[in-house]
Length: 217
Image (cartoon, rainbow, N blue to C red):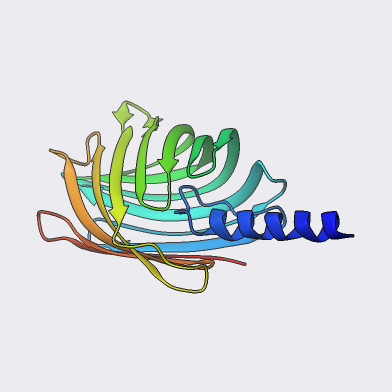
């Protein structure tokens, strides 16, 4: 009986410890639903997915992206697969595969074309209670256009908190989308995590504000 109670206590402590980590991918525990939205001048999206297993989720996403004379309107089905997870006492390392399939309405100058596409993304992230890092690359090609996107993110928490408290982070994001961006976009961001709620407020070095909210239930 004492062994069962002791094991339950250890599991509970590990769960609480784990849930203070940053959510590096839009996927919760098995049977959970994660919904999120991002709003900025150049990119806006809404997405929701359901975790089929502890390693797989399926969802839908719609977004718009614009810049450099292009405007993209996209609707897709997204499959997320956790390829690798390495848990250590104070850290977690993940490797993810995102696969999106859908339609894109592409505007450039006075032309407007519709395309079907299949787009894979490989993402690697590392996180502790104090440090966070991520690198990802998405392959997205339609017609003769190349919209591949590379992201690098890194940051730190200001201080540790308990599971019931809000933990603040500072994150510096770098992003480049071929054809859309003439240069890398850098976004200093404040991130706040409380239980299953995750929010971000950032402003690019060019002055473009962005807001991101994610909730898992």
